[in-house]
Length: 159
Image 1: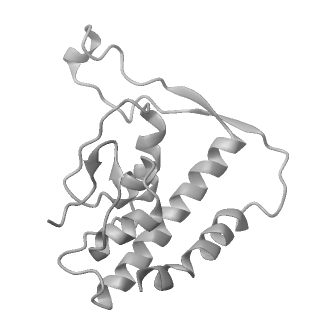
Image 2 (image 1 turned 120 degrees about the horizontal axis):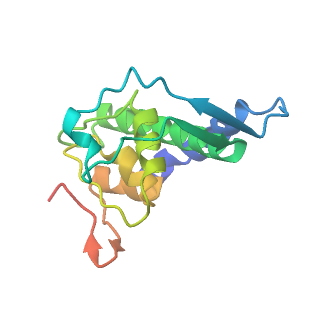
């Protein structure tokens, strides 16, 4: 039953992820500079623990921007569909959605390396997706259907 409900999600994700880039642009990368007055570091952070803070300049490519936008659109669609399934009582218990927090999730994930560990309290579906779990697996877990094994650990929080 869950798979039947998820069938409309994939075409929408593909359409949303590519709709903003139909008009071709000649921009291949963008440089940016952050205002250092906005970010005030604690006075003791100039030592060996945190260094001098984050870099104030950076560059991002078109491919990175497109990938980030696609991931944000996928997370938004995942959360919207999960909300619909919750209202239909297919997802039981509590559902803490992360609508509106997609940029934070994708931005944080872009700064982490694959070996970094991440701990969340709730609203973790977006983080779970950025860490490599498919939308199908996340929705199955939310609906209480059998869950696959990942790295020897069962991915289920509703036991």
